[in-house]
Image (cartoon, rainbow, N blue to C red; front, side, top):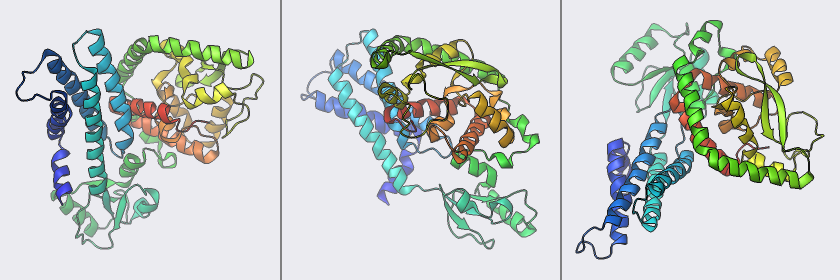
Length: 415
């Protein structure tokens, strides 16, 4: 009961920020200055507290922002978000010559990580998403369709427990007047009611292609204004990463050349924005004479250097040139092989519609699933792609950005 009450307050952003600042700046100060409260605060300590406070505010606020997206497991974002802001704030403090203590900053960082994981543990132990569902129409098998939540089947209009919402097929003819009255009453009581498709999409992060109709395609059209903002953000990130990128690319090129003396780069024709064929640049990770077929686990065509650069996604770095040329985005659906795309056009309804946005180096499908090989994995990948197109926004791109950092660190989904 105590931890539940604690989380009740900690879930609010102002409370998280206040507790986080006290925990991550004041405790290090007490450990840093053994003479407190008898000594005056030095200039170095003051700036150290400001730098550590900036790290705490940026990290807590970003994680809170990410958690607003439905179906997000925030634990996988803690480390990537922390590493990003730790590096950014340390660089800014360094180039501006702020007189802060590295020891203090590291001590505060340890406190911050502990604080973030404690909040996450309390949340996971005490908050579970439980939905009641009315078994009519396409909502009849919700537990099988969406195992990510706990489900309570409603046989009658009596509900005696707290739930996060009620789910049903609002378009079903089986929804009787009695059920409609029940839904209306629950809505008035403040219990949210969801159409089965919306809750399925938000919890799984996928859009079912076989449930997509022609008249829904208009709602999938992304905002032209955001597409322009997205391109500007791509350019800004590439410029900021350019010094580190050039060093990594140089070392990678030397390693590839030393291993077998072959070509450093590999050019592949792919299907780009609006179906246009583009040439995508990559570091060569396979033997030069390898056949162009889909990659499988433990593929014998992959070289030793190739195995490492594919796992860390370093082989994708030359695609920054495609981004600069306006052919790719940093984030978007993966650009498909031309022959593979032609086959999918024949097999998957509305497959061509995924080309309405620029393909990306990383994307929603890549960070959730990794590389797809067989028909079932490809179907899931396309469902992830359509979800991204339908919900494309700065929030979703931010989530993918931090998940990409996590993917790079762990090598998730590489083949």
